[in-house]
Image 1 (cartoon, rainbow, N blue to C red):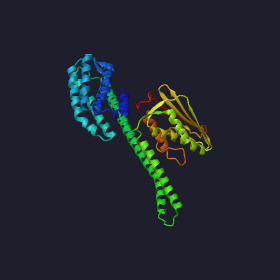
Image 2: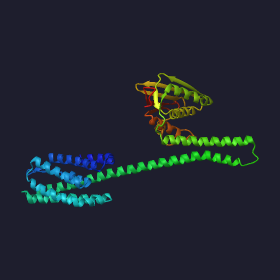
Image 3: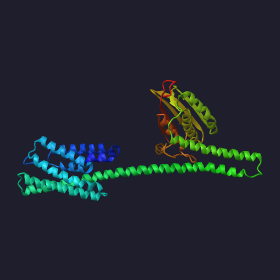
Image 4: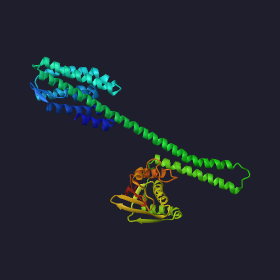
Length: 411
């Protein structure tokens, strides 16, 4: 019970609680363990229960601090009094001395930087507690010192010490794994930031280099007006590309909505399909629409358009030999569902799981920013995305949004 409780706590819960809650949880785990240990003792010797109550008591003191040690000692003595075990004053004297010992030793345990030192401190505490308890019981209680008693006492001391050391080892291991997982999470964030920075730098540098080159060519006084206009238009086009990349990045980095309005989805999807038709025609792709039931959506028009356009553009580019792009709209209960499906090359399971990750793309010249924008925009509108795809069988993006009920409301 002690192993289970502390392993779960230190592995999954410790990072989520403050210091007060930390102490209270340790008191709860150890207090319950003390009560169970005393309720079901190993043996009764002269009506004195022999058990491992000192293990949760020492664990609580080591990891909960002096306050926990005092409260757990009070729980132990109080429950002993309730059980009606004789010689309460002797127990009070014994555990008061042990409490003073733990108060002195606890700082050494907390300052120990390595597991080996912590185990040595725990070993000293366990042996001192067990031997002092045994010695005081022999002095204060009428117990006969026989060979069987000595063997039993040694066995109890050994088992208690092993139990405490195992608890400390498992707790420290769980804490180390938690710290390691935090460090890994930080490293992953730093890696993501560096990847984004490197990719943005690379993608923006290319059009800027083009712009710089053509601006330098404009210095040539022998250029004709036609050449000048071509250079200027090429430079502007490159700058527009850089601006588009930066806009995509900012949309991903700041997915919150600013100009929220109620959108008529059938109207907006019709406009988007008309807008993308020329690009589809260039790639021999037919666009089909199927709006079974109209719905309203509270969102930002420009970001919504960008989201659907990115999916549609990716779908068209996934059909290099031509195909059909289908845009559907339906309503299920209180959600508007938009489906964008293509008949292109499709994706495998591993590729689907990577969608939305920074700079993952299945295209040779893609940056992955467009898909990230889709995911961040849908999330900002409290929606969800489901992707279904198989290699050579096409891809379906299913977007679900909470529907707005009144056209005059933006909420």
